Length: 454
Image (cartoon, rainbow, N blue to C red; front, side, top):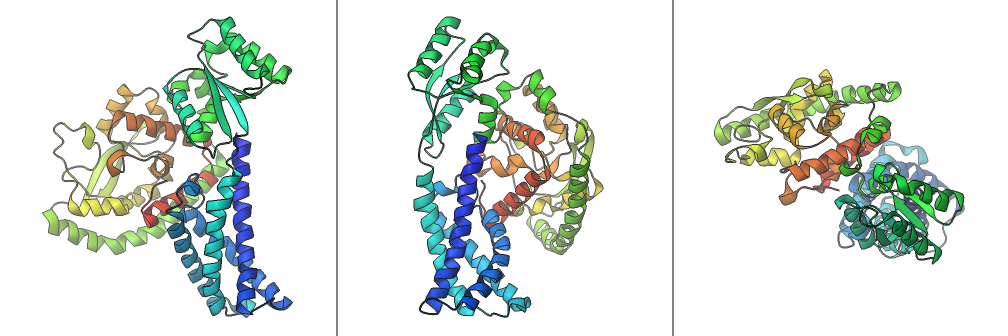
């Protein structure tokens, strides 16, 4: 499944590259009312090739490579055109300040904006989805539980997935021989070609030899691990499938020297740069807060750091008394102020925490740290919750760019939402890398600039 996912992204990326280069040719043909001279083609292709590197970064931040972007056809024109407009501005600045290619394509850039936008939209809306609409893999799922039911509903409800579940077998509800017979009939009849099961589930140990013989030895079907499939689809770890085996394989406090070094260097450099922005905004934030209620500008909170050590974080005040954990407050009287609502929407309230990033209390990317009292209650209510503090918490994280909360909230407001956040956090702990951190930073920019979560 992972290979198919990479293939889908490769097709999308190659198609986008082809569209950009084709748009250059079409634009030149329109500009010169026919086939342009060879030297013109070469010079423009060379210059635009350099620009395409920056342009793809803009596409990424705009959200064109989010997994479900191709489904939002009504929103695609605005996303594409806005990204293209930014890219044209980048191109104009590039040709003005870096005249190494000795061309000033003012008219060409205007034509290119419309040509590339039209071709990109046609490719994204009408061609690419149809390439992936084929249901190539028919599967049977062996197991039970709400998370597995969610997996079936998600996969079967979205035609873009090349996998479709044709049957579900519940081994806990029927005899072992009946389970084996059902799976054998499905495979032998050609109804399914893939068996999806939890290979680490002890309750399925009696079936593992049978499944191993059918898939790996006899080659009658392909075997997929349901844990890996769930993580591939939802990009989070299913809590019900976590046990001591999973913990031993995936949660380690061992140092990753190169990654840790790069991460710390990025934390210091970026926090210094954004810290300058904080000083610029400070007088305006202070004035707005004082004019509204005359209260304090900053708040300090004791939160949970790595290895559950206590740390003190600083924020611009956005609520009357505190700014998190309101769903656990008795009576719910603590409300977000009008200024605080704006600070939260723009994430300006988080900027003072750059001081904590610089100190090393937190990182730019990692699980969001809980306030002390909230953490103690969550540990009692949610199994494995303390695992999210096996690494340094962060200013933004995988859950922050992936999870959508009810009623437009920006943080969990219930135990169920907090459990889902934990699933995302554990996924990040398992898969963390410099490139995943870069993705999260760019996705955060996407949310801030386009006011849209993924």
